[in-house]
Amino acid sequence: MAARYRPAARPTLHFVGVTTGQSSIMRVFPAWAAHLGLADAAISGIDLPLHAPPAAYREVVEFIRDDPLSRGALVTTHKLDLYAAARDLLDAIDPHARLTGETSCLSKRGGRLAAHAKDPISSGLAIDGFLAPGHFAATGGEALLIGAGGAATAIAWHLMAGRGDRPARLVVSDCDPRRLAEIARIRAAIGSAMPLATVVAEDAAANDRALAGLAPGSLVVNATGLGKDAPGSPITDAAEFPEAAVAWELNYRGDLVFLAQAQARAAARGMRVEDGWSYFIHGWTQVIGEVFGVAIPTDGPGLAAISAIARQAAMG
Image (tube, rainbow, N blue to C red):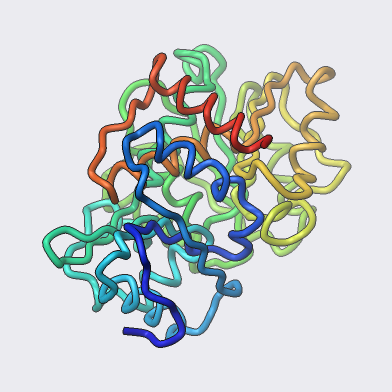
């Protein structure tokens, strides 16, 4: 067992991130655990720097694998790096994780450590929750994902592979051409016919230009982590959103500069602006359900109760 980490004294869900102590989940999880009949469960944060050395990720995975009361983990920010560094330590990999090359969840069953990519499910639940039925068909809207990391890859999969109402075109921007190539690879792997445009964005002005080329009613997502994991926004204050756009900031805490930029333009452009709260709810409940083997509602009164508990705990 990795000596750096202390063995869990209770059934524990680990939270692998950058600034985990600042997340409201540290207050929300105990309230959720009581509601879900997991009163003995605990949560523990593991903070790693952005793009930590592979050895650091392997140490975390080995600790969770070998510690009897460590039940699993939610992984944020490090989804791609952890998977790449520790894939050989995993006993099972779900199809989404294998396709996207990331893991947002580690779980243990019968002594076997499994990796799951829950973001394609949780991001889809969030999008389908805040977009009106038939939104893209009614508006002809497209989708712009600013950032091509793990969260954006999962959202791209949902938009390209899902059935029903889908954007007319997907645009993905990132400073790293390799990440853009990965989105294109996934499109080919799933046989999607959705038009895809990729933009190598070396600065915010390049994202402004991508934004300006979108059709009315388009979905615009800040999937860069800027505003939470690092300061700033991926667009400039001069950026113009399309008419009737839906702007989605994946984060719910931090400086949230992109969110403020979108809100400042919302009335004039007839926009809807969403923060990351519903994504937070679905992301965590999907992982908790997997790690502890409990069924958690994804809509209706059951989900409303889960969300209300979280808001009350977060404010407390």
